[in-house]
Image 1 (cartoon, rainbow, N blue to C red):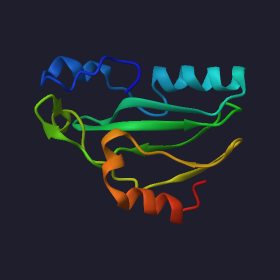
Image 2 (image 1 turned 135 degrees about the vertical axis):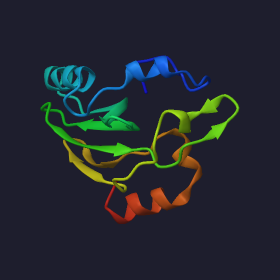
Image 3 (image 1 turned 60 degrees about the vertical axis):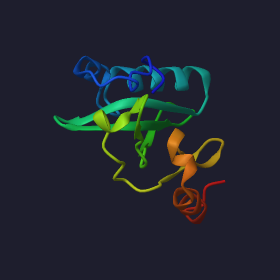
Image 4 (image 1 turned 90 degrees about the horizontal axis):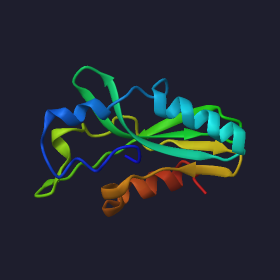
Length: 129
């Protein structure tokens, strides 16, 4: 989550205020404009609210023309001292998508996911470069 402090070291409901819808929230909307202006592919990690009670650690993928291509939701959510992420996030439920972008076929993996091999394998099988 790049547009907020790392709030997961505490379990306080006030931090739910950082959550926003994807792709129609203010952060992804602004990043789509910037991607278009700069002709850059952008991966935007945000605290997503899908509906009340459904929150995810999500990365929106935006192509160089500003088009929203889709999102990846973090699968592995730590819950240990200083990383109380299960207080805020549900595990991802959208698989391991691969996105055709102006710079190639990319997959996204978020932070703690890197410790688990099934996602890396699936991204490769799905054609990520």
